[in-house]
Length: 625
Image (cartoon, rainbow, N blue to C red; front, side, top):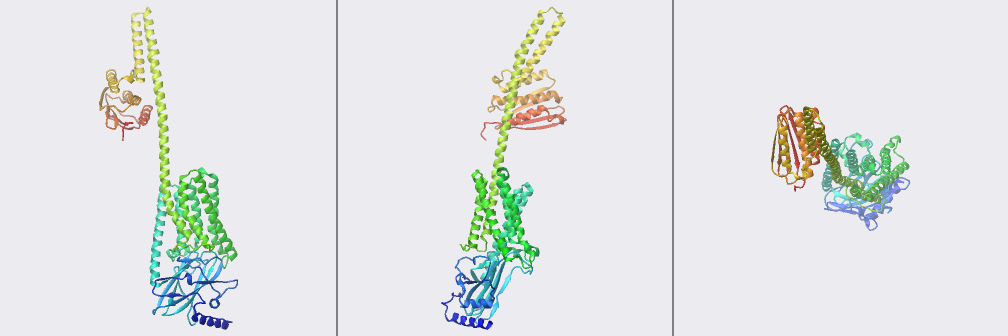
């Protein structure tokens, strides 16, 4: 049998060298740095029975290989998964020097590839292959395999590659490079993914810091999303195995684990980003169900430990089909949720939908490549990994937009609260003033009139002179007190009297009738406060004055009004015993603070054993800032 195969090879090889027209043209190696080999590549798919390398060579020369569709990309898709395939390529060194060339494919542990070279004396030799990860144990991570092909001057070689695809896209190169040029490209690739890795690390640590500072779960979910999607993206191009070369435990993890844990974090991120718990509880519940399924699928790759030779082919097909379905369900669910939230006029949903566009596009490209409908490649990157990576960066911008939007909403909420508080305080003050005016009028009109009538009636009685004088004095004193109370509640002619004059009269009267000598000063002129505001300021001054009279024990007090360019500064000073701690939050000072707050002012109290100083700053409402 072997003799027959050898005869077939010899006859076919002779015919091949005799005429090239019956075969796909070989790649001519010249002084160019790189060569597109896709138009020179042919393939043969095994049937039920395995094909060894000797028989594969015979099939090649027997014309059983078929040409592969040409591409201008760096990698190509060999077609449907779950198959054993032989790829053939002929090289001719047209130079007078030895040429070293290299080609690199990327595979996971599910797939395998072996390379062979056949020279013009039909000697079959395995191709030299280098792998970044040198560990011998079972590896789940993807890894790049570089084949080195050395051609002697004018030498012609047939290259055969045996690929076993067990359900994942296989990245077979569409180009071959000169050795030195390949090293330069490898350096550029490492630099590119070094920057890529650095950006992801920055995003992860930045969100960790924000999470620790704010304890908002959304930043924790974004951290995990960026972490696992970054690991998935690096694994798809074979860089992860290189980064963790020598770290044995990392080889236990699968790229699909990174992908589906990343999806789970993505869904939780969407939950928080779009506030689904508050707005769409049924979507929120479905999200958690899908998160559970994603985590379950992330653990399924490790069930092969229960099988001596790994998962059976039938189970691999079921698992891969389940991955495709779950991937599609995740994307459809996310897109549908975005559409629902956009219809609900959610601005964040629009930003989130824009960020999802690269993932959707990458997924469509991935699966149309998978089923051999399209052949779109993006250099070293898997379209899904590339889309997810772009989305991660766009989400960073989305977080900035979300933070700005939430900040504005909080500011508007605070403004609404402040407006409501101001309106409530205004209503309280109006109610108080209305009640004060009613009581003042009652005291002045009814009580004052009744006391006058009582005095006249008493004088008509024939009482002893001493009793009459005593009762008359008592009635006069009561009448004066009621008049004073009435004036304090609502100063007479307040709307017709200048504010400063009213205060000057009041403090002259207090100096004459109390044990405290009051000094009243003012500078500037009031041209901004309306009468309603002046009444509030008057109440503030009266409350502070009453506190001095009742509680300070002072002998002197000073009241100052300073009208500056933009605000009124009101200052009271006394040489009393200071404000006791339990009095600092009393009813009087609370009323003062309420009125100061209503006028958007500030109050500062400095109190000690040598006296108390209270300074209040009241900005003008209608002055241009």
